[in-house]
Length: 256
Image: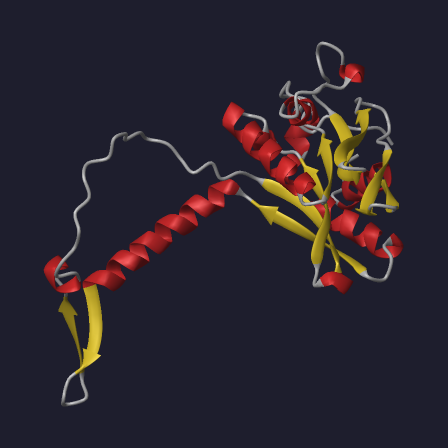
């Protein structure tokens, strides 16, 4: 079955891309479980950046209440409370100078729809990561830089990385931006890299230096998705059939 456009009508009115991105990692994990060698295990990881903001706010509210109200038991065994003044909490606090810069910003939390593969024989060492790109990963320059920096950091740790991007509604290519930070480009991308693509990457030693190897494929609506190598070690890869996992996901969600 062909790749569908989950971000435009009419499909966007009858189903949600979040459902696809939420289900797809689990289906990939199920399929990897059938082909991974015994020492490797795969697991899904989904983290939504917007949720972290709520968690942080709740934590700060809790910490504020914890600082202000301290329960203790008196001699009669009853419980009382006391409000501690700042001077009681910290009788001699060093006061820093005013900051040289104050600006309203955020910490750049971002969405993660991901599958991670570990080598269980080496204390669950991370060996591969499959990143399903979401609209939030492509909406702002800083969002794209953060994900690209994450992928580059994984590659430096000898973790193979696969990017799967079906977000055709936003015209950016994170594979091309990953190459840019190395000062390189893929001639096959042309002057206008496609907004939908899937690529497998690994950075491995060769002699006294390292080489970046990539397997890139443009994704096209109404066409099948490719099979790409998922590298587990320098000389071991398994085939990741994106078409079969994508179709199973759509089938599970009853997306025609």
